[in-house]
Length: 465
Ligand code: 2M8
Image 1 (cartoon, helix red, strand yellow):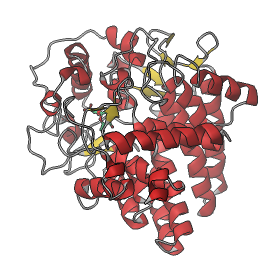
Image 2 (cartoon, protein in one colour; image 1 turned 30 degrees about the vertical axis):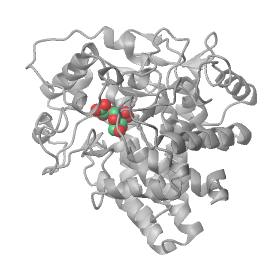
Image 3 (cartoon, protein in one colour; image 1 turned 180 degrees about the vertical axis):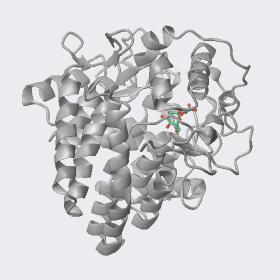
């Protein structure tokens, strides 16, 4: 969104935020799946879809279930859920790297045999949490019969189990309980300073020239990753293509191999959600034992990422054998989303989150979590995951704090995030010092989390109308 655009005030539009959020989702709806954003992201993204399904559940649990099932239709034989399913109708020049660039997936015996094609990367595993949420909402609100939602759980359960098994085998060969990512895009927080150390060590080899397309959709290139970062992103894709997306070959050659603390924390929560689904379905005991063991292994792994001096959980560079130091929101979100924390650790994290380095920073427009602490050397206020705040991350933090019993802080975040969206719209991310909307407009997951928040409890705007 242009810095010159006046903020759209949905609170004043008289139609209400929930109505506007529904409209964003309706406009981005492609039938069985939802575009992440109208122009910048014309395909189906994995963790966007899971979070979109969480919001859609409030509108139509059946459609929400379909969102997940469409994604899982493109699951690989290994259990991998691809980070993008390409929209065959999107103009070829709308997004790079698109389906034509990922031709190796068509050659891989592990990939789904026919189009629509997919990437061979992954994204954080929020899906089981979304599936359980759809079930819960359908049951509470009676928007779908219990039999129908149980049938959905029955269909999705083996696929979710295969997905988690993939992450805990192929992506945790070291059995540390932590998920290895092979590309910063797999974290979902693409150019976060979390990856600076590991990405800086990547040596770019010979590869064909490429043309970035993302810059066409934003007015200010500083809102997107730099060319230095992009070149490495495309090189890392290139090396996976040369490995024909084969898991063993990637593991042997990939120059970027990092234990992603947030994906690992989300996987713990997702394993707990899957265990609940297994219980509803009365799945075999051995499945449930496996999920309990995975949850335990995940929490143990996360504990190794705790950095006492920074008071945060950090990612681990497998190839360099070191923790990657950066003060980002992932350092709180990973342990909070995983849950099961000792009370003293929970208190320390909540205090740190509210400190002047994060929510209490004096320059913040609103006390919402910046993706990177303004005091971190990697902080850039307008650049993508290096500083702006993201409603979807605030939503995950809110969800985690609620579960941890930190209801007051959670509700403050919810109210503040809704006030922000109400003032500036459903942007992809926001400048933490001015509140300005940046990146894509009408981002689906921003609308989805707003809907889910609004369904929780009335918001002042709703009370007034
Ligand atoms: C962003 O990532 C894509 C690459 O996957 C991009 O920059 O082109 C990230 O914010 C990611 O987390 C998100 O899933 C995706 C679509 O919203 O956009």
